[in-house]
Every structure is written in structure tokens, then in C-alpha cells.
Length: 198
Image 1 (cartoon, rainbow, N blue to C red):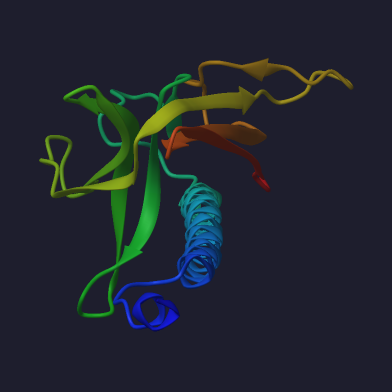
Image 2: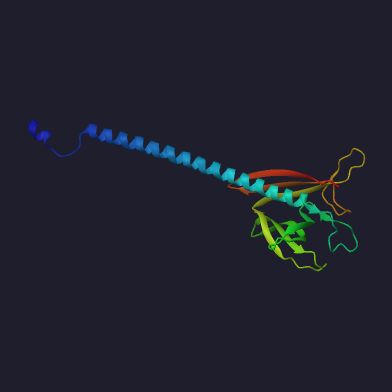
């Protein structure tokens, strides 16, 4: 009778338990690896968004700091070389063309909303005539939560006065930009202050 029990087909209880243990160990290792990959993916997205925000702020800082102190074309006798409010800015910049020549352009930076998504756009036109059409437009950065500009007026004495609007002669002493973007259910923000040398 012992010969009949030993020759039966099937798995013993120990073989089944060992198999379950091996499968559980493999499942734990795979789950741990996948959760690690998910965390790495989140970190990568955050770093990418931070780099995008930083690159956009660097671009805006460079554009504004290299603006020209020349009057805007359609100011009807006014000498404003820069006008703006808390959400938009218009200024004169020097740009390089495809033929390596430099030309003056008037640039408008403003927030545009399309299908519920806000983006910071740059529109530019040549300074050939007062009625120049916009020649180009591109998005500086998309999915903008907040874009705020403030202007530092020329100081009277030792007072510092930031304003939400600039339409005076020339340029302010400085411009401060605050930019917040929404990425992957997170809001990232950055600020820059650009000081002009008069």
C-alpha cells in the first residue's frame, strides 16, 4: 500500500508551499521596483518642470534686460520706451535676423487663454511704421497659473515704490516678474527682478 501512495501523480504540500513563497518573493520584488520607478518618474517630471520654469524666467530676464531705451512707435508723441501693467508688457528689443543683421522690434508679452489653459505669449513686429502688423508670435511657456509684473518707479529719496502699471517716460528702475506654472498636479513658481542701468 505504501507503493501506491508514492507513485501517485501531483505535488506534495511542501512543493506547493515553496512555489507560493517563490512567487510571493518575485511579486514583492517587482512591486518594489515598480513603485521605485513611479517615484523616479514623478521626480523626473518635477525636475523637468523646474528646468522649464527656470529657462522661461531666464529668457524673460534676458529679453527685458537687453531692451532698448527707444520710444515705442505708436505712442503719439509720448517718449515711453516701455509700457505695461500687471499682466502685459510692451518694449523695444534688438533682434538678429536670419542674415545676421540686427533690427529693432517691438515686443508684446501677455497672457493668453485658450480652451481653459493660459499661456505666456510673445508677439513681435518690426519698427518700420506706426501701423506695423505683428510678424510673429510664439508661446514662451504654457499652462501658466500666474503671471504678474511690477515696476519700480524712480526713487524719491530713499523710498522704493513698486507699481502695477508703467506708462511713464523712459523705463522704470526695475521690473519684477512672478511666474507660476501648473505641472502634474503641482504648482511651481519663480521670480526675477531686472534692474536697468540708466
